[in-house]
Image (spheres, one colour):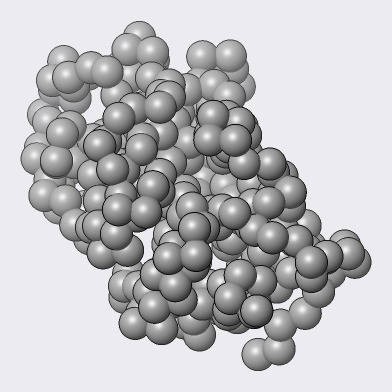
Length: 283
């Protein structure tokens, strides 16, 4: 695999002060692990004063183990969970900003999922609450986040608010049409998009990694030009376009790669480590 620059010009003299990392398909390999090489590179970057920001669609609890492994709390790092819907300073878990899903949207989402033959889940403390804990896609979400599942037979009635998102899971072909239906019927009340073929994210309107990143960087006095953003999915596209250096993984979708300033190696080839070594540790 050969890395390459896009048509954008990259200034090799820029001093980057922050690196924003998607998790699945980016920071972690296919086993959902941070490799020793990638961890070592990020630890060196943090020792040089670079702020690490983990930006994922995962719930905050599902990011916890990686944030702790990288010791981002010790070095002043941040977690942007739910695609930016919940931002916290990891050193003391202080909530910097968050957006909540309107409670009245949950029954409608539940009915839409049920009518399409899909399952719906949300996050309750340290657990995932789902309508069917044996569903393969629910089990996959539990595996990704290393969270136990609990069954809610009366999902709308059992959900404890506030919540930051619901996730509808099911056959990708079904979710294509369900995404269109929910987006049309609930426009202005929530945003719906697929983060994977079998995952339909239902979040408060306006949730966007770039908007959340802009909010955070302004709070911590880091210019966007001094930030690197790395990702592989469509939900990473906005922050890749926003950052001073937008990086797509080799395993990223073509549209994501086309929008990036730089294409790195895949998540199976320590693509994040390569970016850190080239643009932060190069001197």
